[in-house]
Image (cartoon, rainbow, N blue to C red; front, side, top):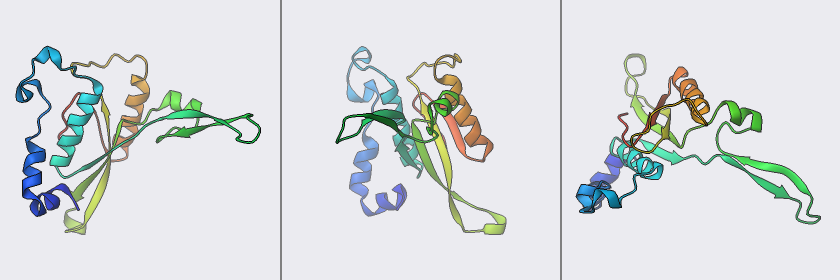
Length: 162
């Protein structure tokens, strides 16, 4: 069930959800009191995507040290997140904060068939500008890869138009 169908079934809850605003003006909180972080941007992006009928899933990427329970010996770390098969891969390409499924209606030869387009959004704090430092080249490589395959891929500081 997508957001639009859910909203038809639960109009009061949908209205309440959509009325929630995260900006300082709607909360009547001074601008200085709200720290607009990457987490703030990510939450806004998730609301934007839901309003447009899409689905956004958090993609945590990293590795956790592992030990043998019986002898305590160190083992190969447990890796998690998309495109994080090895340390070497993670240095070259870094999958995005949000992984999307975007309902799309196919036209002409597949009229009426709906697909879920794959998407990725890398969230950044407001006023962020690309510098090419740190993790940014790997993140840009992932977005370029997804876009090349026909997916939706963007950096975002808090808004997304599907």
